[in-house]
Image (cartoon, rainbow, N blue to C red; front, side):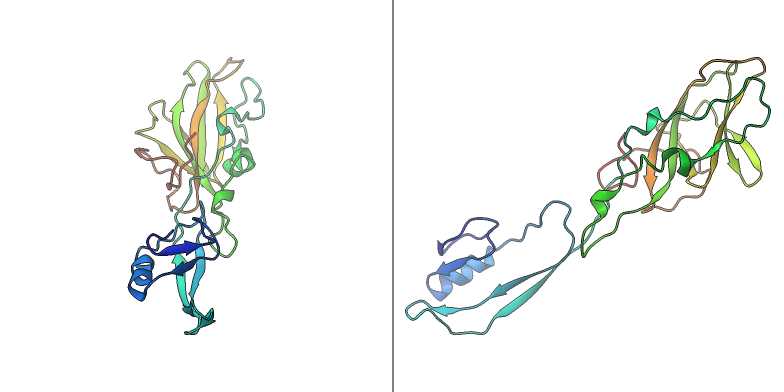
Length: 219
């Protein structure tokens, strides 16, 4: 947008602006010029200027081009309601269920298309999840995650201020208690995009900032 001087055929967000006035008036108007990119745009743009003799409508300068660079910022991924994902049923008294990878469970729910800008930034991939609640009781069984060849219990104390990060290639399973059957208490979680680097099994993370420009989904 621009203020000052006399404008013809112009409104904010127009591709072309014609300014009429004295040199001082036009310079003052150009000094007020601001550039506001479209939502989520990043990359390169240009602004071209040329001075004309208003009496003869002929150019008195060549075309001057200003290069504009819009720096990308991250957009948090969408989860597509990741919290409602259901795992395959496990038989009662099963002692070593295989589980499923984080990527298999949540890959189809992950959406980072907002970061995909033609000529600019690219979409991130699914880095993993933050587990923020564990509602399974001891009588039902234990949620576990796999590191290398070992299975690790997911503590009942996980929360939004004490979250556990699991990478996308990590396996997750529910190990039922002896004699237990029925629905197990669920896990609550948030998806994480690859704009951040975290080690698998990182615990005690305070998710004070989610959504927005963070790497963590807002739901």
